[in-house]
Length: 294
Image 1 (cartoon, rainbow, N blue to C red):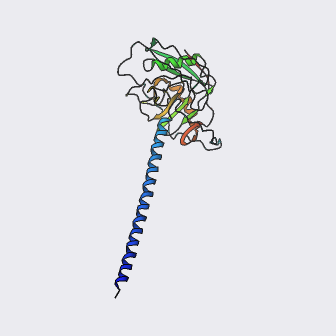
Image 2: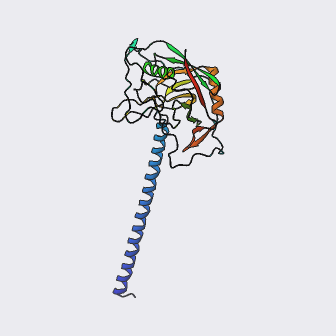
Image 3: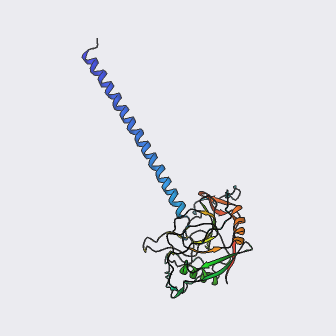
């Protein structure tokens, strides 16, 4: 029969085991909590990156940072699994704009122009009718119709930059091939994803905007936190397939069905991913020789 001393020692050892087990369980809970938090943060950052990367100075910053090695040109390109054939309808405003509007194109002191450019006129800008534009891409003509009734300030800027030769001899720096985002992004003479004309202008969006094949829209970097204004510049994207995006990107025109076949050919060659699968520089260079206005 155990003595009182033996019973006390046994009880002490039992208590020590219980305390050790409790500490171990607490440690495991902390590890699980930390892992869950990290996974959650990664998921949120990934979602923000996906949405933000359709932006002008935005779409921005899809280029590798100076410390990163460039993607291997020998890597197998990511290609779209499916490209729809039917053009999407061009969005319409529920309430028409006045016949003429005033715009604002403030200079960006911290972002000089990637190529010499002047801001366009900003008073009494036409907000009705359309303008024809031809983009010479990889030796083929891509015909666009720019819609002033949708986005007069955007069309005004695009036409001005085109007439200044701003888009001439530039490259399209980004191609996405995933099922939820199929776009070709151009308009940055620096081909880094962060270049622009040295000025910015506000969004011309409305809740009814839906993105789809054949639409021409502005890339941006979201709202400027200091001014709460839009960050549109010169970067634009052509939707060749699906684009599951919130209505935060100004649609200012459309591409005709025959021209979209040329964009399809570019998309089918694929992209070399830079961070996200199906999102990077086109496998083969995509060059804009010129943009002319009818």
